[in-house]
Picture 1: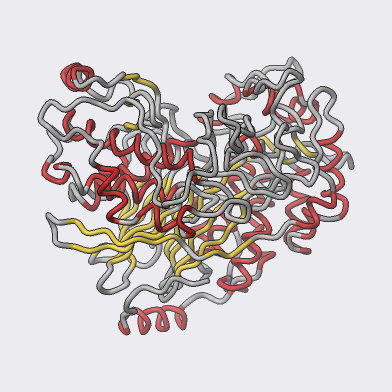
Picture 2: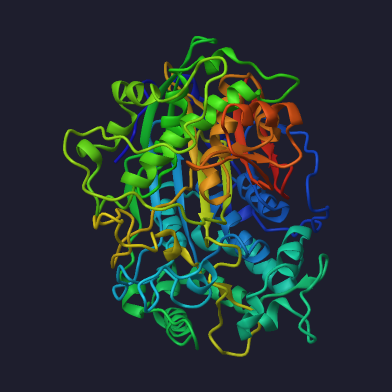
Length: 611
């Protein structure tokens, strides 16, 4: 189903047609390997990038460059995203790849579509999947490492479906960058090397150990040139045959064997599960949002369930409308304690509803029969009454869920659970198309299981641990089922929040953005949206802001980014303040009078490129 903005500008249509006529022919493109990326881990100041015609933002310079070359050759936003994803599978394997899933939000100048490539649970999965013999939840590492946590990967099939509708270059050509780099080799980035050095479980897998570690069992350092001929061969088959090359035949048998034959933690995934996978096209979840200070009305679109992102973002923004938050500017470039109090209180309310209601809509009915009920203005106005907005108002610390329906609650709330991982891609092309895509294998290095067909080629690809996004507990203390419990064929709830923002009056794209970061994705993305829409920042400035969150517990602040006065003021309001690393990986592109301006997170290696 399609979401159509209120009006499409005739001038934009004319511009797109003109650019289409000027685009390079597909036959003219030959991928050229760029200089290998260099840089330090930690935080690196980034300037933001202004472009005129198109732009691509991704988490690794080699991936961004591949997308730029596709756009320069006349490719569409979807074409660029495919090239970017395949390179990320090689150069950022800890975060995403062909063994994982993705959500893609696409705008073609007239309509917005939500492409769902989320993994599904195997037919053999049961609600007790993550319980031990005594009925207690497994520890995270016990659940994740091995075949038990692997869901049916959906990213490749979803991208193929999006390409059928919106691709301009041939599918096979879009794999050339990744195949070339996998064959010739790429320099391990500082971030990949850092994560590899701190990873305790990956070397337990023989295939991964032979690829990521030297003969003495030490992880390869930054700058080491790594080649992956097995991945190159698999990508070539997918390029030639489409997603069937991954989900059927030789590769599918290798995936199933890897999952089922794990020596201590096998899963139930079969070749039949893989062959049955179908990506979905959903109606995006969109809501109107007015900024009083600028008198500007926006239309914000994101993924519907099984993603919880757009609902939670919408709730936080709209709950803040019932508070004095919009009258609180930045102080010395930072959010104030008063604003952080209001934001984290709104977050507690949103995350309470998220835990109560959100799950795969094929298995769980929306409250009041419509997910928009959670964004209903009267409902949120009632919820906002729980926020103490007085000058020295106290934190509620933990919020209960609401209920937009008159019916009794049918589910128990899901306990808080660890979530990790992912990567984000934003693209705008020369034809008026734009997309936001968040892609994942969940935890860093996924299930730590590397698939290799066993034909004598080194390397392979990692499998996801996405089933661990389900609730480990199937029922609550009251005996009611948890909406996001494990069930065969079900898609686990996600926090991925690819977001497109439009001007409500004209329907023109304003911004594309998103981030990795597990459940914190919701907060990273909301921070960026709020910074641009309320505080007048450009995307780079908004991304650069310190991170903050609440998952309906403590107030989380990015360590070493807030002064003692801010921390003490929050504590005086009753907040339990915890300072932690919050390494978001935000990417965002906004429209400007002269074209576009893109920002990339200083906490990671991403860049924005364009023309």
